[in-house]
Image (cartoon, rainbow, N blue to C red; front, side, top):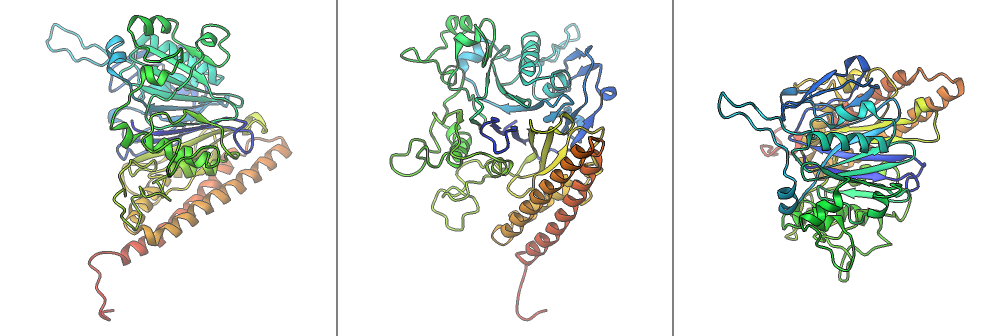
Length: 487
């Protein structure tokens, strides 16, 4: 599923928290945010797409989840945080090449062609990862190791990047072919930018096969590379992206421009991104996997990057002046995003308050990020009781409606959208701060559900108010309007 991921190390963030964030860019999938309690976790999991059954014998923990409302294609839980304050986002669809895919083919579902044959299940994939991993891990590293066992046992039918965070570490994991994988701990002072490509551009094999402090991989990865002549590197350099990734013309339209915009935002002074002599252009294949930002990064910065439509550049589809470049690259804040979540783990808070999940539905260019506590047994109806019918009673549909209406009258509506984003973020932060202080002072952490209800009531009020304004603007810009004092 084409998505965009941002990972923020604890020393790169403004408050010492770790953050993993991703736009879940499906096909206008209707999404909701729920809590899965241990009694609701399946004992036997069966995927819809791959027809794979897996017994889940371990004791699960409570976790949040952003599943599809329509389950005809499976759950696709996307992102969440568990009761051990470990976050997970799955997955960033990445690219590979024929050399890798021929050496370790994808494990795809094969339907029996005759009555004498049996169906052959496929491997695990994006539909399944969160449910199979998040309820059972107590650290980001454990997430990598558990998913690695699943990949080695069942294989996968697609190429994916997966992120895990706890209050101290972030790990990024990428699948290689059907069964292989590698993972790297995100440097604490860096931000990772991942736009649908194999991302890792450096990897310490000595560490991976030694102390494993910041690098992990398949036990036979060296032999896999050597035996299949995969290494394209020169001069002793080891760049996994050149070995396992792709370098296609389509990457330069669909993928690399997104990395360029995010890198440009994070390091406007450290690197040159524009003009003659630019180190990186929108079509560069060597945009770094991670960067040390020029200033500390807050939730609002992550939101801005994931809302990008190349604003401030000639490539902005909303640019009033067409220079011949307008809309030529794939935006980050695309129209068909189902949900975007920022899983933030705050080390300076008590365990019951460490995890905050910032949630936005629909196109990020028009949506607002709402924070909620995850140490709860249920989410408010405004987030959880989403149906397939359009309604102003849920955050999902309210957000989708604002985006669809504002897009048609962008120049007039953009100011209202900015006010909306600012209002929800500001009041959301104020309420979280209020409840942080109240619960810490009383040493009573039972008010998280009350806090979430207030947060959602606020978001609903501001969403409907913005919807009213945008609807009026869109109505005034309808093409069948006519003005000859006919009113």
